[in-house]
Length: 171
Image 1 (cartoon, rainbow, N blue to C red):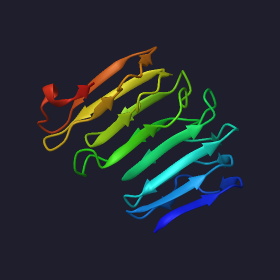
Image 2: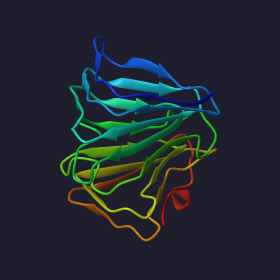
Image 3: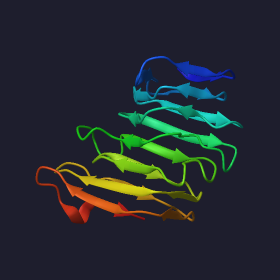
């Protein structure tokens, strides 16, 4: 438990390497995360900070927990596709939160599954596309606060297994 910080680079040699941060814990990585993608599990917080762009070569997934993006503004914390949630959790249990502006590449599509949340936390960012998924027990959510989310491409709404389309929110 507590806060743990890694200042060095992290090379992920297997696609979708599991990073398990337990509830009540935080792992801060201030170096470059490179090579393959990661899966975030555990209910805790993973913060991607530092001054250099991450260069993961595949899609990352936040299955459970909070992913905080805290690179220098304009530096890519995420390098490839990003999916938030897995359709089986409770609403709001998979979160991506911006701690600085412009953390996601402008051409990247973000997919929010039913329990997924994109929290701009008052920051602004531009993305290429946004997919919102709605299921019977939870619905995806985008929270902007005073920030602005610009979507350069398509916003897609999917209703999964009897979900309620009116429940997806962009606030």
